[in-house]
Image (tube, rainbow, N blue to C red; front, side, top):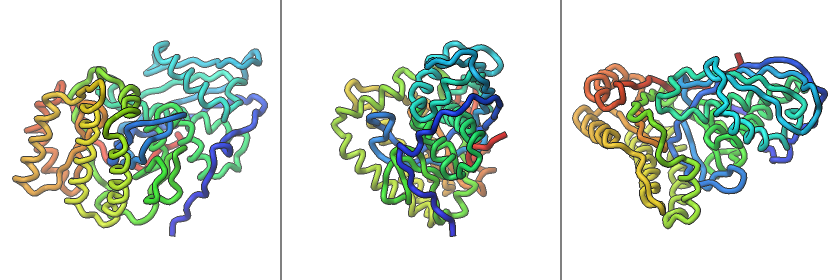
Length: 365
């Protein structure tokens, strides 16, 4: 029987200042793909509805943080940032915003200089949102500083605090700490679920989902016309918000059961409905916007036709963009990859797609 972590309140994540130390830590953290989507947030990066995601294994960000005492003690932050070995000043405002959000819980940050270097296993211009993997990797590295001086911190507490910190950088990053499935947001369907951090899905998981595949079709590498941040804000006065939040709770409860039974038809129907609902909410916002591209719709129609013609359980989900995540069992990988190569790659920008699968979560290197 798997033991469940104890519940922790937000105030329990406040650590004490400690004398400056010197060291270095490296974490590789994955992206994730939500099956039940969170869309709409409030307050300090809290979700309006619970979500549940597959943790990926190959789309990862590797982040090293070298820390040392600052020359002068004050309340400002001192850090440098390299991406793919190059100075990237454009990322500094986002990192500083993140540090300001988490310093009440990590007051030791103002005593150290952080030399941060980061790289992605996937091309930066591939159209894959890297905020989940990048912010979770950085949060894990910062939490590791605390563990340096308090080595008796439990793994449950460490993972929960890292997820809590990651959430303050990017909401979906809360779900990238562990795997193969993570929920975020309070729901009676997941034991110990929380608004403040992600929770690993415990209990029986059907074997078919343990090696589930996710092939990501890169439809559009360009920057989205409407950011996810703005999209979340537009849910505040959305005419369908209340109905949607209730639907998400209902869908998550059903999905937890499906993941234990392995009912593939039910999985496909629910996951595709969630994807289309997300984009329907965008199109019904005020102002309205559309993130799908013509090639996105072409792929969806091709997937439906392929499934009807072959009977193979190929399904799709979408993030807040034009790219398509194709989900399917590992046993059908050969036939489905052949279909992707011959029929779907033509809809991808530069013919690019990424083969990934369900993973176990972040790793310290």
